[in-house]
Amino acid sequence: MVETIDELSRLAKELNQQSDNLNALIMTLNKKLAALNFGVEVWHAEPIEAGDFREGYDDEERLIEKYRGVVVLGYSKVQDTWQLAVREEMWRTDLASVGEREFTVNPDPPSPLLKAPRETRIKALRLVPKLLDDLRDEAKALLNSIGQGKKLAAKLGS
Image (cartoon, rainbow, N blue to C red):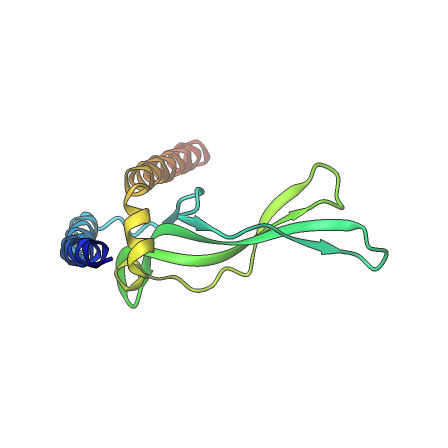
């Protein structure tokens, strides 16, 4: 047991040191992204964490929905600063409608990734590259929309 306690002590020390490094990494990412001045909010579709599915029934005891709480990673303006952020959402699958639609219900306001629990911050790191791809794709889509608007304006001006 003493060896186990010693091992746990070493692991806890290393985890705490790496957590400090993790916070510095997140701050660096926030600083670099903010310097780009995108001003575009993006939320990644894959959750960082997801709870177990729960079921909802109608008055006749028929299963009509499944739902679960998730935590998602995004880039958003939080506390007057553009930064990596997380928010809790409720994902609901409506089984009563044709085609089983899934949608988000009542997303909570986002909070800074830096303020998230350590485990959430660690798990979020694996999704940062995908979030950056999402940010790139959204910027391209916005540029495309602007280009289409310019073409339309030019046609109307002729």
